[in-house]
Image 1 (cartoon, protein in one colour):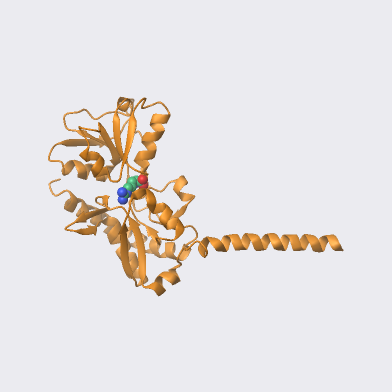
Image 2 (tube, rainbow, N blue to C red; image 1 turned 90 degrees about the vertical axis):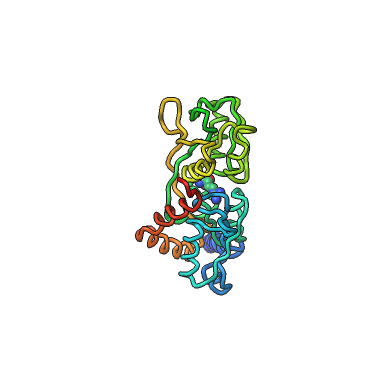
Length: 275
Ligand code: ARG
């Protein structure tokens, strides 16, 4: 009779280990549950504020589509919204460690990021655009071989360009990471030949350039798109389900009511008045 008892004990021990591991996801990591957020009276959101129309500084204030969405979420929870403007490539780590409750920064949902955080339903989509000085032709991916390319660090643009260089499609191209797409654009024509970033952000940079720059979708020489359509999601720590449920509920309503579209137009107009 010894053996079955031992086996039961072993199975029980294994179950305890698995349950403890699962629980540590939500508790030990510093992740704040919805209950804790409510008790603290504040929702902490990390963003990177150089990404109009989703988040940008206007009259000394950080505004944009993501900020309005997160204000609606904070209102729904009944707490005050605190937004922190940080480098884009630190946002997912901050959400993962619990420093931030939420990451809202025009973040593209992808499988790699899904391993670190959980995403809301998508609320916007984008494609990769290339910006050059107005006198230049819009380059194809292949034509960027040997060129200096500026990207925002840690973004999907950064990852895509790095991949194309590694694969030999953009032979001898050099990619330089900046903390904001507009800073990369400021080096256009001097240090940088082209900037790659998300569509609306690219169009706003061009609209604000007084005719100095132009932009279009990044394509391959055969005319096909260089990258797939990307979708933006809001992220929370893995397993922070109650918080994600509130975010999804608010987002679904904002999308259905046409609010997300309305805000996108409104903040686009604010960020690029002459476009
Ligand atoms: N969608 C791109 C990405 O997820 C760029 C996002 C940049 N966002 C920002 N707030 N700077 O990588």
